Image 1: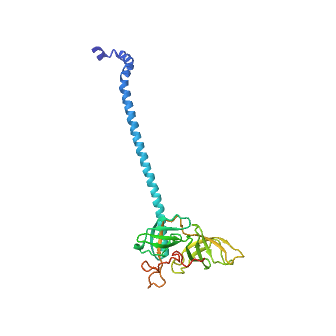
Image 2: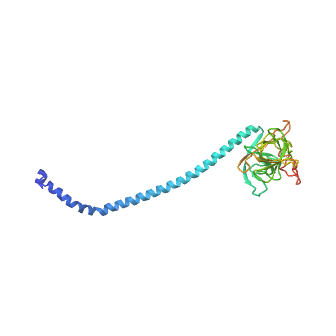
Image 3: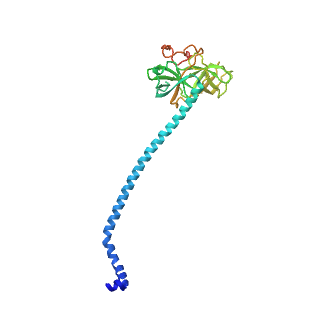
Length: 279
């Protein structure tokens, strides 16, 4: 051993013996090595599974937040349109939100989250960013019921914006359509004509979009043309709306029909009609 240590005479023998012994060492260490590898594999798999579950949960939460952000972005756009509309209106306005919609097929009414405590009154006009929607028919302390302009009991005085021809637009129970009456066959009418509020009757403010003419049927055997129009307001889509206090003609007088002095409609006259609806 001393000679080998000093002169390294058995080097080749040691190399040969290490080659012979290696398989035995590998066999002896295999159970320990295999156990460590399996333990590490199971631990890694468990960790990866936990991380995968966490990522799935985070993805679900993030997707839900993205959906909420999309809804908030859409709401922000609608509010911007309403804000721009309120600047154009010039009268006193109050933003309200829809709480419920009457699902009856021929009754077009909605409930909003503003009532007498916020100054709302019966007969008060309701608008969205695109045009007139309807008016308040029933008032409560915190909520109000609104009849839409397409309700069969609703009528509103309008004029053709292009030529000033006055007429009346009636609701017919179709949420996408109104009837325009009392227009002679020879009247100057065109598809696409905009109908605006006249302000007659003192209930709706003057000059706001109501509907657009979509169809004209002129029958020589009838005194009046059959005219239909589509509301400009998004009656089935708008969620945020504007309650409007029309500016009185005489600024020294209070607005027409304020909350504490509003004339109560009788049972014989629909509260939603600006005048008695023609039979």
